[in-house]
Amino acid sequence: MGQTPEEIIDGQRQDWNRVAGGWEKWDRFFDEQMAFLNHRLVADARLRSGLRVLDLGSGTGYPALLAARTVGPDGTVIGIDLAEQMLNAAQRKASSLRLSNVSFQTGDVTTLPFDTASFDAITSRFCLMFLPDIPRAVTEIGRVLKPGGWLSAAVWSAPDKNAYLTTPLAVIKQFIELPPPDPTAPGIFRLAKPGELMRMLQEAGFVNIVEEEYLAEVRFPSGEEYYESLMDIAAPIQNLFARLSKQQQADARNRIVGSIGQYRRADDIALPIAVRMVAARKPFG
Image (cartoon, rainbow, N blue to C red):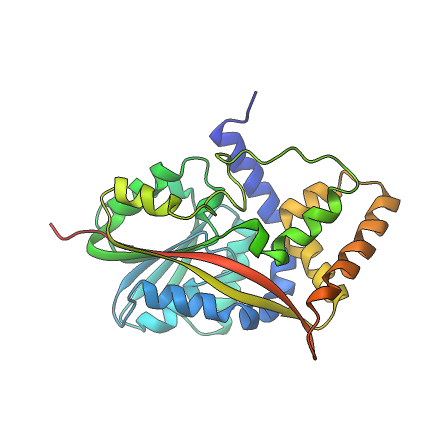
């Protein structure tokens, strides 16, 4: 028998709270490596001075903090996430950056605790594919957006284009049997299929929908640093590693570090990623 949506959400909350310290530890590294995604999301949401913005699945503050700088002192940004400890890290960053126009609160994206038509724009980075009921969340996004407001979202694209994510999974499969993922269950690649999120947005009444597969790399100085970051921040990988014996974990580490050597460039290791970028507008009237 499968888990209820409530059980899924509670498990995700525990997972992401557990890795909050790892995210904070690697914060500067990923802020530098993935800055292009934050800027793309801010641009696709048409953010400008004075807007009121909602960021879904903010984690440790992406892209909410960039959004706050973009909308300026006359604008406001609210970041929402399941994991309180992730948001605590985001709030510390906001304070260190002296951003007083951004705040963070815990909550479930499928039941947004906001008034109808209360935001000018909504952003979301790597959140929607983990939701148990994505169409319901899309309906909620449409409800809280003002007419004419934009949603911009980033979700992971196909596994075979995301060596950054799939390398450890391929190695873990050498030690334990992993059932094929349920294509309709929450997970990293739930919205990887072209047009899937676009269809849900169309059904919810959004217009001017644009979807693009966006190719890039995440760069690491060494395979060891890649592995270390993985074990600090990737809750799903941590959960799988916990099923291995100590010896298997050591062997898996060596295989992961060895297998990404194929992506070495002159000065670093460049691991491919493919992100599905979707932008959509709530119609006027």
